[in-house]
Image (cartoon, rainbow, N blue to C red; front, side):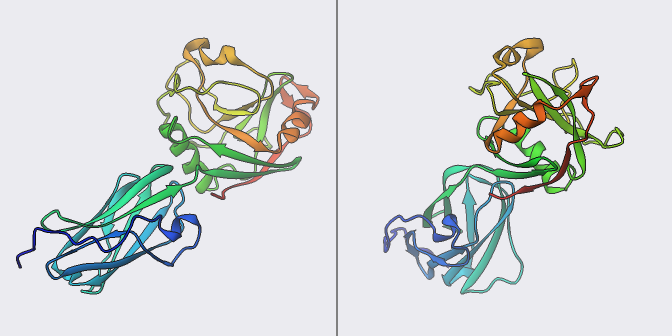
Length: 275
């Protein structure tokens, strides 16, 4: 099959409707035809950072060979069972913000392009003292955010506690249960600092040992500005902030403690990625 070299533009660039939460709707974009291959549209489910996304391509002659690429996706793969009129591609969303999804013919000619806009991820944390909403920053701290979300989406933090509370400093959790038994963790990650994020009041950062690349699951929330932690001992990696529920952090920070451990356990009932 020979493909014509000239692309006939039949549409204008528009954001896919699915990007804004209207999952499953047919989505217009910048579309072209090449020979017998035509792309009529793409339906995409809601795009959420770190989650699997599905792109359904409709048109004609699609069995002649098409590919889909997206700078904000990793592990792109085509699902089995495609036909001349429909092909399905899946990937893991690996970037927030704006990026393009592009469909190309087997000769590399661009058939379809549409802008995506993925919101920054958010995590709902429900505790025995109230609820918090955490916003994460994968573009500045991709390794740290990916690590944290792996724990969140595996329900790792459920029923763990805030085991360290230092008044006018930090509240720390994610490592122990109410019996002060340590939870098993994944391998430690590389320290990410110097990305324009600072340990200010309400920010979320990774706890670690004296070794810089030693953070696993434990995190802390800065209850005051702690900018000294940006550089102390090599720095502590900030990767998000509390956007709702900071008063809960303040309440936790006032609890009586013994050796920095609250006398009344503060339970993390659940953590759920909600965006």
